[in-house]
Length: 521
Image (cartoon, rainbow, N blue to C red):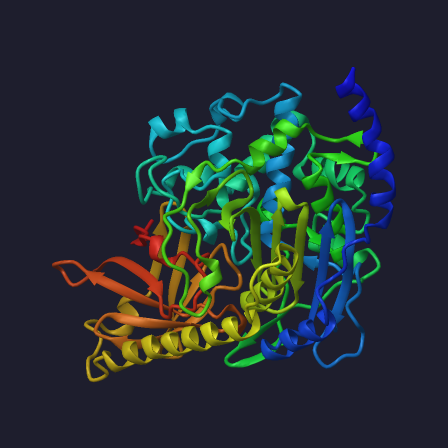
């Protein structure tokens, strides 16, 4: 009875104390700090959301939608969130698990009988969970050329071609980030729910969470009032407007377009285990699944410029990275597409989250803001994230430039091709990508990926039987070396490729191609 009296008295003691608690506020001088970040990293605009204890602390736009134009970013301006979409796909699968239509650890072929990987044993064993956690044995970005840049392939054709991609490691033995298995997850959602990925995410997640401004495709984002941030990137040293990525094939891996205010609603729902107002949209157990580490990622010391990033563990869960930060569990992800990069970061035990959306490709910019916010609510020792990221990026740029210079210095510019140029011209086929044509045009070789309209470039002789393909669309920023291997008869037996610079995005997985001449009919 005495215990009951004590418990009964708590509300009368706590109520006046709670009434005195002020809502959380953004870090001091936050607007000025963001302005400094935008200037330092040449980012035209940002959408930023901060949530704390189930409340929106801040949802605001900074800067402008388009470089040189006055229209400001606001809280509802849509940005492509790219791979931050993966958590929505993982949640969609979790909802279907709750309904008994899927099991996390059941083989994918139970639901998609046509699905195949390179190894028949892996085909039989790979599970729904495995689709999400980057441990399939595929190499980094393997298969991305099936959709990046946009291709003529359908989503179904992309899934069918996965069987021809040779693994880089054994199944479930190593972490390597991929996108193509999230495309499989999208097909799986449709197979068991009867709804396309786009319709399922819209009807079951976006609308119930209250993300009314979010869209599942770039086309919809541009049509829905046109409150969209314009994409920018550094092209040959100058930040400028670039074309957005709009291929719907990659929607389950990176198709969502969302503003800061809607991302705040998403974080609140996530940290309240699926509860929105009085309604629960998914179970707390599903949240635990999404946030539980599955694939460990080997760690190491942080960059010397960023000592607070030291961690004791890290890995991939279901659509999220999980690691420790200053003694707290951090649930996070980034996103990157041409002209858009972003960071979502949540400290579940602190009920604290931040999202930074940008319309320029600077991870340093979004992290300089995100960690500044996290540190403020953690009452962490002061650290100058703007200076730290600035120093790191200066070192990275210097290192990349030195590597490019060393590559050029090692070139034997006096060498000549073994064959007349016309004898390199042919159609070559890779088992998983398809056909690539090398043609002779005005006494110069050109290369065209026949299923990727943007991948047309000029082959400039580099050394011996290696050429540099310089893509005519300079926004690609993905020039590559093309090496022809001759057989004993002096004919081209195979062609290999690799990125020409460390700055080339990993989704240009040229190194995975094994091109062979197509026999004459």
